[in-house]
Image (cartoon, rainbow, N blue to C red; front, side, top):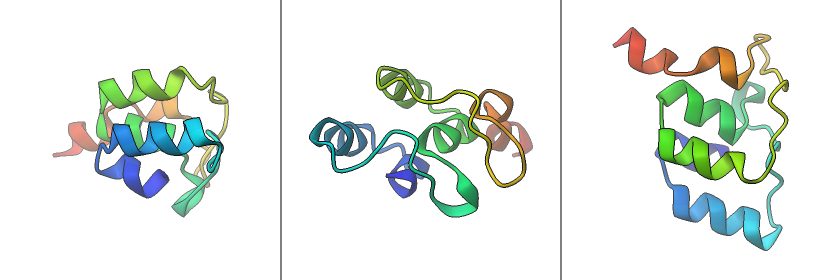
Amino acid sequence: HTELAKYDRRAAIVALLDSGLREIDAPGESQMTALHQAAWFGYADLLAALLEFAPDLSRENMFGGTALELRGTELNSV
């Protein structure tokens, strides 16, 4: 679901989480969770949906960044 988060696929991610097939804090590439990805790309609606699943806001990616620290980073670099 972290890959889906890169492309703002909210409905698919929520379906996976609702079904129990994925955990909210499951890491993907670079230890980024779906929450990290949504924050990185600035997907506010996806962030709101993910927050309903009570993710660990202090979880760090492999670079030591939390989702809160990454918010809008990719958008700001363009």
